[in-house]
Length: 60
Image 1 (cartoon, rainbow, N blue to C red):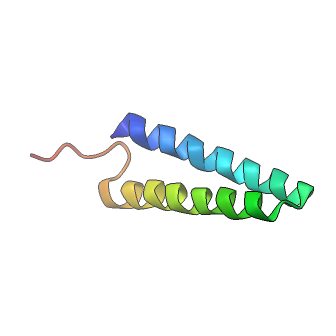
Image 2: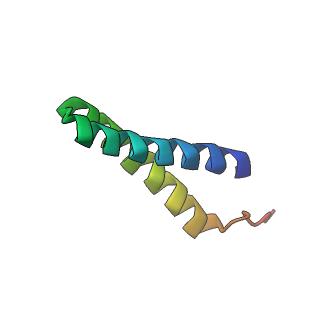
């Protein structure tokens, strides 16, 4: 789960960068898809860190 959170965090950061670039280019569809990607992946990473902690606890 550690590596997955890092990868999805990077995807969220890149989606945020894409959103900013789409705003500069005034591309409505680009803004919508990039922001949706940022919101979904960012929410997943934040909630995983809040629920499991980082690094995740190994509870059996």
